[in-house]
Length: 269
Image (cartoon, rainbow, N blue to C red; front, side, top):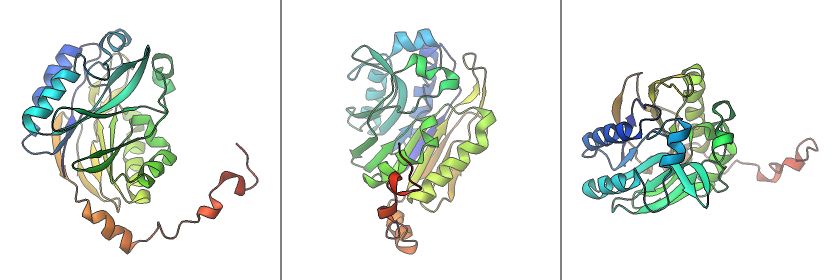
């Protein structure tokens, strides 16, 4: 599986410009990749009015129709994080679009980042994002989700072999971004693909330095970007996962009999 990471400058509150620019970048990458990943909230940024106005439905919307067309034209899968509207609620969500232009699934962000006021703008999702594609079974998480290892363990137990993480991860926390991506890859023996934005944000007041990366099931870095707008291409050999798990059989060594939280120090939740 060849994956194209669209690391782009996002202009908060300028969805038309962002969509046009992102599509141009993706078209350049389409002949090199089987799957294209955009950063978190790349169409609107964190501009509240734009989020409310341009939230996508499950079937169609401002950006979704263009992305479906892109997927069909180039027979490529797409992971795109955008504001999403369902039953009167707005979610920070990621659409998974198949190579035929159909929506395979939608992941709604579970953990909301309060320093950006996400808990005031969005409803929280309640299902993990694991989906079957012709490329294999994949998982999707969004940005702040990366800090919650339980989510990634559940996705791996559900059979995900590659997990995609669109993000708007601020520069002050850049070291944690790369550390957590590597850790989630090594502890679950899966591929981790993180795609971050670059540039500055008028909405959050933060700088974004990219650091989009892919890590293999051992935690080795396959590709890594600098702090410039670019499209990276990385190849995921899903057969490597089984080889790594034979060499290091951590799944066989898990002590599930002790992992119930009530079995540890008498803790109760």
